[in-house]
Amino acid sequence: MDNGVARGFKANVTGKIAGLGPVLALIVLVIIVAVMNPSFLEPNNILNLFRQVSINGLIAFGMTFVNFNWWN
Image 1: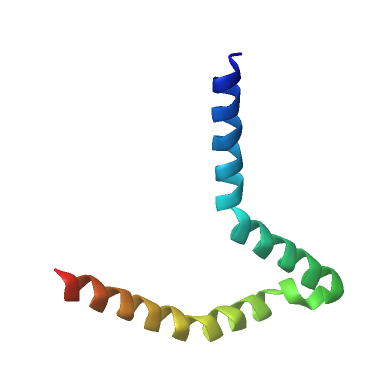
Image 2 (image 1 turned 90 degrees about the horizontal axis):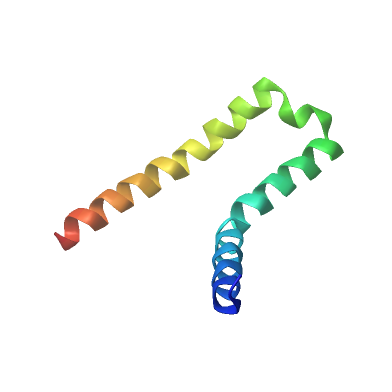
């Protein structure tokens, strides 16, 4: 492989891994919490987490919608 091609490939792979950083961190946190508290992954707890997060999700969706319409 040409040295320039190898460097470009390495930079591309590194950039993609860096873009997955928050997702990988979330997966690691879920694994740690699940090991520390086995009831974390029970269906009732997951449903409760979704209920708590849904308010922030709706607010974020509304703010995004307003921002998109504001600039157009």
